[in-house]
Image (cartoon, rainbow, N blue to C red; front, side, top):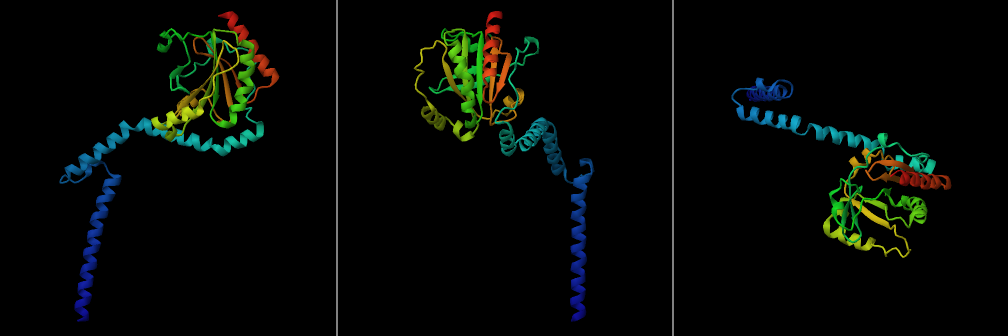
Length: 276
């Protein structure tokens, strides 16, 4: 009886070992060898595997590389890194330009879709190449001051630039002043919620008697590529950009304005207005 039982167990062990080796050999061959080495009796598996790998390799290669670079960048420049840097310099990541950036070396401001509180949309910058300027109510400005705010912490910083600019050039019809708030939460960009949010954010009309109006607009969605193009590193600070009529960045400031930097902004604006 014992001998018979031992023989049965031994036979089952050998069968299981043989089965396991056969299947291990199949997976090893699939993982490390060329697809042409797969058994010819499995054409469907070979075709499906090759199609999937070709699509993965060629169809999504750039998208995968871009996403990998983005994840690496976001991990290196996360909230805590921004906060640490913010505590060190209070949002002043660099000093404002003291002189005008030459037109030949000036960076072009990337196209940015924005929404007004009343729901109307606009694409910045406003240039002669923008199809939206064909309407009678919209003229191409000689200069545009565009203030970018990615977090609520930078709102006061933006005002330290826009208020003196408005006070100095409030009677100019050939200037534009935009304060752009970025809202990157996907849920807030959904149509019903977006409309409700704009209604809440809507502010009373400017009571000051200025020809030049302070226009508050909102940019919804993912703006990672936009930030990369204009080299936005810290999301907790404000970015101030002076654009010419061709949409080129001719001057820039950061964080809270100092009296000296405000003077530089106003001086550069006057010089550019005279040149155009």
